[in-house]
Amino acid sequence: MTSLPFDRYCDEIVTQTERLTAHVRGADMTAPVLSCPGWNLGHLLRHVGGDHRWAEEIVRTRASAPAPDDLVNDPTTDLHEDESFLVPWLLEGAKSLSATLRAAGPGALAWNPSEERPAPVVFWARRMTYETAVHRADAALAAGTEFALDSDLAVDAVEEWLEYSTFPEAFEPRPDLPDLLGPDRTLHFDATDAGHWLVDLTGKNPVWRAGADNATATARGPATDLLLFFYRRPAPAIQTQGDTELLDLWLTRSGFWLEAPDE
Image (cartoon, rainbow, N blue to C red; front, side, top):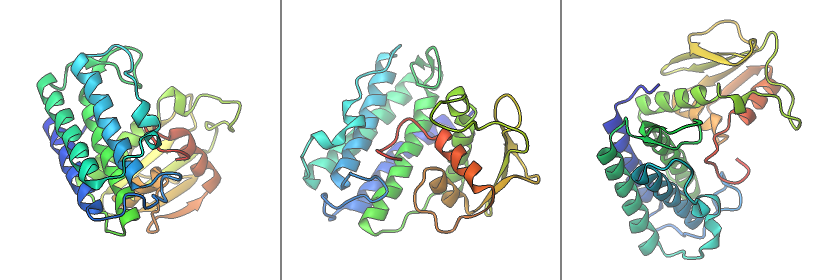
């Protein structure tokens, strides 16, 4: 389920990339990105550019299995730190991905990690929009510039996270983590500028919906800050109360697979 038009996602992949590059123009590419431990700005740009090229190949070839993703997983292997190379390279990849998505159309089928069989490529348009936006926040933090996100994008990105928090890998028992599901376990997310969501962990699988009830734990703040909180980025405007250990466990289990080290 998506709430924004496919063409909007295709536009935003480019727009968010352009805004990311605006944050870092003139910055030291070796400056550390504190929200992605072990990375500098050059690594961050290569990771995002690698994401775009990886997704573009999957969509263009209508892949039935994942394409090689070495640059996504380890952008530190290339020591090229030159802004004059990295910025145009990053923009080129975003535009290529956007064009390939448009040429394919939202209903074209290709592999994605959330499905057992090829699924509509609108997944990639949405996922790459928010992958880029969140890493734009990383770039802004590293460069000491302000990060802002349109409200409708922030809300849709929050709901993307909530949707994938209901997938089996986000709640099935694991030997290295406490069980997530159980009685009296509900989470309330209050976007003070956008609305409310409730995640119910009391059944056989998580369920989320719009609205609010008495909850075991609550996180409250603007939608953009909630998004950053989900991704464990600095979000000082977020206030939490209740069973924060449960909230932290849910965040750990719900994390996306396209992430930087230790995220």
